[in-house]
Amino acid sequence: MKKTSTSSPISRRTMLRSSGALAATSAVLAACSSTKPSIARIGESPTTVKLEDLAVTDVVLLRTAMSMETMAAAMLSDSAVTALASKDTAPVIAAFAADHTSHLEDLQVLISARNGEAYSGTNAQLMQAYGQTALDLVTSGKLAADTLALTLAVETLIAGTYQYFVSLAVQPALRADLVRLGARSSRRAAVTAQLINAGTGGFAPANDKDGSPLVATLPGAFGSLSAVQVRLGPVNDIGTRATVLMDTPSLNSLIY
Amino acid sequence: MDTHQVESPDMSMTTRRRLIASLLAGGAVVAAAPLFAGHASAAEADAPPPRDAADNEGLNVCLERESRMVTTYRNALTGLTGNDLTAMSLILDHHVAYAQALKGYLAVEVGKPSSAPLASPSGSLASIARQLAALEDQTASIHTDTLATINGLDAATLLASIVTVEARHAAALLLIAGASPIAAVGN
Image (cartoon, rainbow over the protein chains, first blue to last red):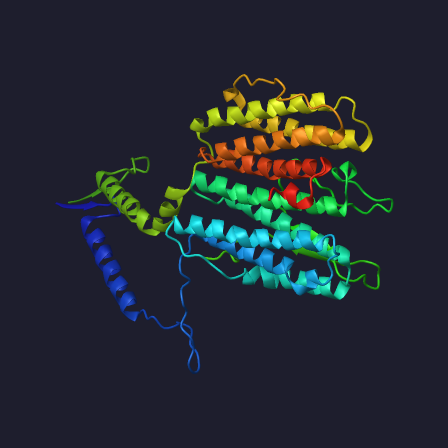
């Protein structure tokens, strides 16, 4: 008597056969693989270099903070600013620039405590993105008022940077240190805003008689992380001025 | 004689062999998963938690401070007019917003914050501003010290956004009190 069973499509024999075929195929494919680019090219072509894995550590944040402080000091002491600042505001702006330089020592201590390496350069990425543009506009505008506008923007940017870094820092103690440094820039921003629009009338956001926004010492209840906007440079043919947007550092402008 | 045994369509599709094969496949996937997710796991291990119940005590201290600042500013508004009143009312509104934000964060964990005034600022605008600037500095210090002790990222970012503006309050009030720009910065 012959029995034919069709109850299951998977038998032990079928499984062994399938597994063997799969292993053999894998071996063949592995042997065919190459480190060279798979797309056919004529002549020499560069090999693909895999990007290294970079982590945003507390040391990276501190190194980036150093680059931002260096950039702020460089911008505020640039000849474009010092040549145009009035005799009343020039010493204040110079003192602010010196403050940023002094913060580098605080940051170096924090980096050394974490076995990191200090960074002495400016943030080249952001200097290229908007720093140099802002200085060029101040130079071409030849307006003394632009020096204070730029100072306010830079101090607001640095304060925003430290505030943003709190959300990235791992150690609670470091978050407090970052906020302390950011608060100093906040104070400088408030003082600069008062130099532009003095008195209690300059505290709240308001517009002038033409409807243009005036500089406010206290623009919001909570610290803002949005891009800092500043109008600089000469008035163009249609009666407006260039607006520079200054963003806090992001993944492509951190100093790893 | 040939006998054909045909499987009935409504017969269960789960056999012991399939079950074992499925378990083996599932086990292999589970075993291999960490190999693919190694970096993500390492990164997440260091990430601070968004909230931590241990932070509530410190945040309640911050809330009480803000509640007392609100009362202090309400008292300081008496007698002010025009731009001076508008300016101080703006700062009062900020402190109201801070207290509300902290209450909202703490929710059912809110304690019973005192709202007793911290001082009774009086006299000229300069005199009032000087007293309030000192209180702003103290408040920012309390929040910053708290920041050094809390683990939760949400509370840390909230406090950072508050301290950033309270530093502005202090400097602006010092200028109104007659301090020089360099002194108002705190140098």
